[in-house]
Length: 292
Image (cartoon, rainbow, N blue to C red; front, side, top):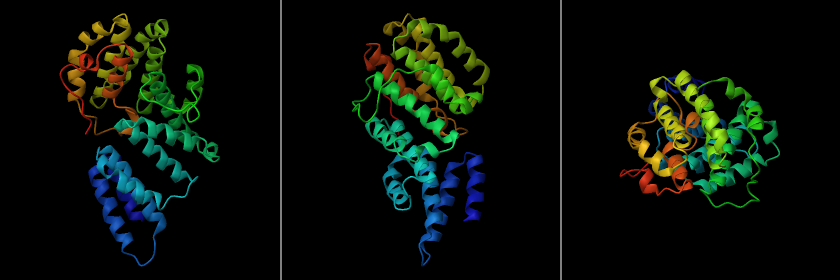
């Protein structure tokens, strides 16, 4: 087991998820052949395999791995919450928004949720902000009892994401983007205009590496909305080239999907186009989006 963990740490650090997944499978085969149930090793290995499949966008394996994980997870444990977190993020990434709301409700209402370390609860806070965006953008039908919509308070959100706000990359990119998205969808036009320069400078200073290319492109697209006077026809025309760049640019192999794009940028753009009364086909040009 220790040998497996060392190997997984090595390939995870290199972002070589294919190699890491292969290591998982080799050790899963090893432990399942034992004449006893190696509960802890298999719990860890199936969970890690689920993460690697996510980052490789091999979603077809999710159902099988989910069932395998469930059989070894005890509800309310640290690993169970991390398992729920990855399932929620996979649902968001695939556009299955309704199950994401249910998973969020089940996990955050669990009595042991408050016992989780701060770095874990902050991730759930960022995810909740994305769910709030989906809810107010009317991107999903949901039941208020399962997800309470309250006014989004930027200051409170900042106070609840102190750790990740210090890092100007990684999950902090999602923090910056989702706050701007909420301003747009809540129609807080003056505040959105005020944030244009700050968000532009953030992208220029901290997202210059090639691995952040998709984020730079998407932020340019977002900033064009207030700069176009929130006119869907105008910002659609301005972003023809940016859209083509975005859909032709793969997610960086140097960053985990769950670190930056909690919801794929293409899907967010579709939602914004509909919100600002533009036809999806207009906003997406002549190219259809497939996240397979």
